[in-house]
Amino acid sequence: MINIEKLHFSYLTGDFHLYISKLNVEKGEKVAVIGPSGSGKTTLLNLIAGIIPVKNGNIRVGETRIESLNDAQRRDFRIQNIGFVFQDFELLDYLNVIDNILHPFRITRTLTLDKDVRGRAAALAEKMGIGDKLKRQTNDLSHGEKQRNAICRALLSHPKLILADEATGNLDPENKDRILDLLFQAVDEHEATLLAVTHDHELLKKFDRIIDFRNFQSKEAV
Amino acid sequence: MIDSIYIAWQYIRFNKIKTATLIACITLISFLPLSLQLLLGESERQLMSRAVSTPLVIGDKGSSLDLVMNSLYFSDEVPELIGMEASERIIESGLALPIPVYARFHARGNPIVGTTLDYFDFRRLKVAEGRNLAVLGDCLLGARVAENLGLKPGDSLLSSPETLFDLAGVYPLKMKVVGVLQKSHTSDDLAVFVDIKTTWVIQGLGHGHQDVTNLSDPTLILKRSESNVVATAKLYQHTEITKKNIDSFHFHGNTSVYPITAVIAVPYDDKSGTILRGRYLSRNETLQIIKPEEVIDGLLQNIFRIKNVLDAVISVVALATVLAIILVFALSLRLRQREIQTIFKLGCSRLTIARLVSAEIFIIVLTSGLLCGVMILVVNQISNGLVRMLFIR
Image (tube, rainbow over all chains, first blue to last red; front, side, top):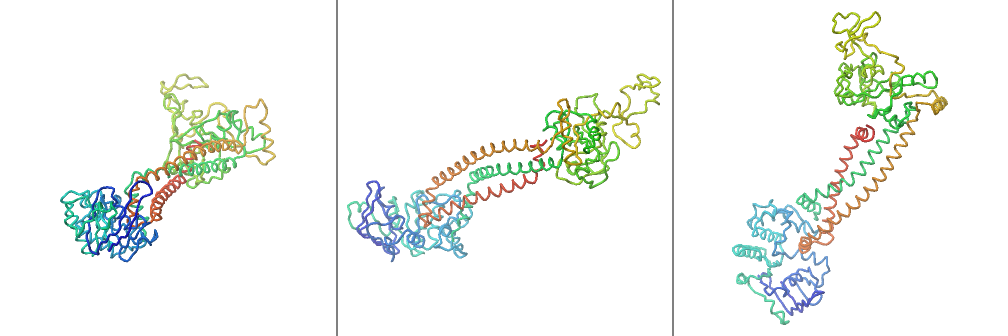
């Protein structure tokens, strides 16, 4: 699903440098990415998603070569193929639960918001246990409910790849397990691939594979 | 589908106080100059149309503005009084038709205008309901007075005493409403018209009382001689003029020196008007003759000079407000960087983000525009009365 080769990346300022000689993630795999802060985990997710353009090296997601896409194509690719789950949920507080789930469909021409999508959104929320809170503002939700809301938003467009950036970082232990189980379940149901950055070593056993970013510091192939 | 308006609307709804403040700022800053323009336009129309249609006004040598404002718009500022002989002097000149005006008293907040029947012909005022003035004590209401007070022919209206604390003063006169004038959209709509003699009765210069020649009660008589009877204050004075008591009403002294506020002179032709004006130019002359159009033109020049200053002030305030609004939006965008970053990560283009912000601005500006429009409509509806309140009375 993801093939990375000879990826070099550094920001215009600062000493940060990321080099990955080779990294593969198979379709349907649930992979955890761990490593110290500042090691480039989030940068990798942003490069894979096409948020940051790739200047040196190759990233292929499915059949698409990310480095060959221009800005608009990367955006279209992202909205069609990638679901993002963030640590701070990144829900819009002025929208209610259902509007947050439907939000990606409202901000792009690539996705079409129709009756079917609305029905799917409600069903997804029901499955995630927030079906009775569709009209509630996100400020009225608990942290666990907020993350379920964010997962629904990430899954609604049936993405092939889900990128989770410390998705359980703000949750209590009980919720962490539950949310991760729900995320895994949703990934399986949608036949998607999960690449999740985490600092939580207790959760690592649930993943199929772990990528440790400390290995990239010495420019070693994975 | 990009649903910018929907998302913008949700954002605006959620941030009610910020939105309301922005809308209030934009509404006020656009409403102020527009309403000022509207009111000044209306005041110019009201003042000028009446001034142009009134050829000459004669009154005491004092403030020509007070004289015009009182005799044309019945303002509360009463000029120095002149005698009725000023009107007779014009008749004798044969150069113009004199219309005496005595606008000094009030009835329930509306000016009582004492005049002659010529006034109604001159102003082309038609009686919409009832009849014209016929006898002492009759009053004819302007359309708005009748509307505001809910009066119709057959009702009565009390004159207001000039001072509440003068216990020895003249009693209010209960006037009989005999008609209501057609709406003219001028100051006449807000006036109560009576015959000039009725105003003298209101002032106490004319009165009606019990017949003192046949009085038997000794407490009513102070002194009696063959030619004269002096009554005490106990003598009953009529406060209403009726068919039964109208004959008892009389005026003491020479009515030709009785007071009026002004005489409207309608020259028979241009030449007569010029000659008439010339007759009041003498240094020893105690009266002045003015052309209301010139006086009002001078007043408008002053008003528009003030308006220009106001316009400059409003422009500076508007500029400051616009800059403050830009700052609010800029700060808001900074505060929303994380949200913008999130929707960008979700796949939103920068153009769409700009469209979302534009939609918010559009809704706020549109709402302000609508609100401003409604307020302008309201001001337009009440501009007639508002102009009178602000600029005339």
